[in-house]
Amino acid sequence: MSKNKDNFTDLLAGMENDAAKLAVLRELLLH
Image (cartoon, rainbow, N blue to C red; front, side, top):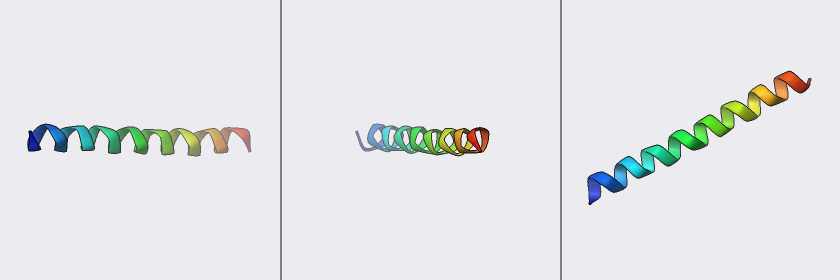
């Protein structure tokens, strides 16, 4: 259970990182 929770947390962290990267790329493309 703990291992699955850790994997899920890592997945969410990865999604947040990807969203941040996309936001930065979007800003660079717009400006």
